Image (cartoon, rainbow, N blue to C red; front, top):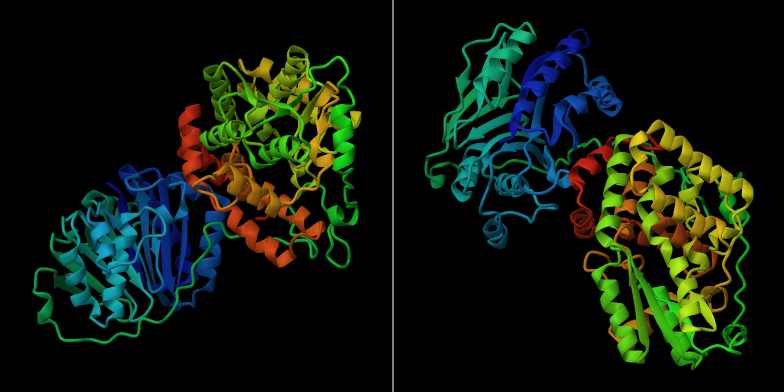
Amino acid sequence: MCGIFGFHWRNFNYASQSKLERLLADLMKLSEYRGQEAAGLSIAGGGAIFSFKRPLRARSMLAEAGYRHFIRSTLGKLPENSPISVIGHSRLMTNGSQALPENNQPVILRNLVGVHNGIIVNTDSLVSAGLAEAPRGELDSEVLFSLLEMQLIAGNGYHRSLVETFHHIEGVANIAVLTACDPALVLASNSGSLYFSQAGGEFLFASEREFVKRAASLSGLDADPVQQVQAGQAVVLSVADGKLNRISLQKPANSFPERKENFTRVLQVMPEREARPLRRCTRCILPETFPGISFDSDGVCSVCRRHHPQQVLGRDALLETLTANRIGKSGECLVALSGGRDSCYALHYVCKELGLKAIAYTYDWGMVTDEARRNASRMCAKLGIEHIIRTADIATKRENIRRNIIAWSHRPDLGIIPLFMAGDKMFYEIGRKLRDETNASSVLFCAGNPLERTEFKSGFCGVKETSHGNRLWSYSIENKLMLLSHYMKQFSINPRLINRSLFDTARAFWSTYLRKDDFVYFYHYIPWDEVTITNILTKEYGWESAADSKTSWRIGDGTASFYNYIYYNVAGFSEHDTFRSNQVRYGLISRSEALDLAAQDNQPRWDSMRNYAALVGFNLDRVLTVVHSMPRLYD
């Protein structure tokens, strides 16, 4: 089970800071034996409580620059010769992935923070009975502390609140709590896995007797005999006077007098990763971390300044283009169908609005989502058209992705994230082959939507934004060489990337950036209108979106939730920010709407990411731990 630990220092001063930091580090390292999935701590002093946690083992967290900054800045805020209390946690994962910050400890509520060792097994009944609030993540410990907080808010005082809390829970609970009013350090247990000592006059505790003894010895403290917090017992240490009060948790709850507390103070909480606010364009919402961006004196970004709206060619031009090459051909238009909203609408438009014959084709490389497959099936059945599917060796494709993700995680780089998607680029070649096999007059691609420009992906390789209409083969020679050079550099410094997927990657580069195509790009002709597209697809075809996303964009791509999570965590933006920014530039939404929508769009899609990891075969928690450890571009 997890390790919890902490101490109370009666008289903190800067002369003793190094000793305090050493004691904290020793307690963390010792407690790591009980859990290595995540670590965190809370520091109470000067009328505030500051918290910090990471999805890393304790030793890794201690080595982080962010942790060192947190300690220095927090201790620097404390008044000289004042008391300080610390609680900490080293996690063995039980309920909920450590990749989600809400699943890690300390648990931070409005009026208290706490750490818990054990498993509470009746959280659902506690929430349904109204005794506790539902957790923000999947953590049973949050329900436990919510129950305790609600008891304290009701005015029951520490004694009665603890008795009521332990009366209602089922499962092991060893806890340490810091409160925001009537400051106290509270320890309580129903299993006895909690020990403390008045070491050299200072109070320290941990989950095991040996941890307390060794931490005191390593820090040069003369430990009093280590005492156990017995099962069914609590210890309340008053921060004001250092008095220790033992409480039995076995007394009937109605035997305590009412004691009203003022639990109204809101905690001051250190962010998960302290960072300054991102500067964003005053016209769109692109941030300062966007590759190659600059701002003028009015705060308008360079992307907005050089923006020229793409003029669509119109319905008649599209009809003329699609019918121009019909002599000697079957007369049918070959439509690339991914199952996403853009291609589904284009297929509808060709068949219903233009009245043309069409054949749909899909290249399924193993990352086409189930929603996309079902949506494609709906469309083709409703329209009564042939649907040609070409599949790759899906097992090999997924193995290639797995190898590249594992290799990337050893030396992560934002520029080569598209390597994860290299396997899908054969859809260009499939289109060329099927045009010949079906004798189709033209191939219609549903890229080219000016709102979906995501040049930042190659921008992290040093490639500059260009006007290419989403036809990547029209990149300049300079940019193609820049892109190739960045990949070659990463391969040289990370040899793990040189694996059996390399041939697939080379073919993808050739097909995408070097071989010129003559496809027809639907959104070069027809304006992209989200409301129209969504209404038609849902009302006429029963089109479905992803269960874990409020946006219908990118739901057909199994990789999108994963790579967007990485971009957002490290760079502070994702594809959603670029998409919403383009909507602002085209006058479709306001800047404030874009900010709100992007904040919603960027919420982690955990179900999709877990499904992606399961299909590909890598440990999502381990890779996201690497992601969370990457230096952020705006720290």
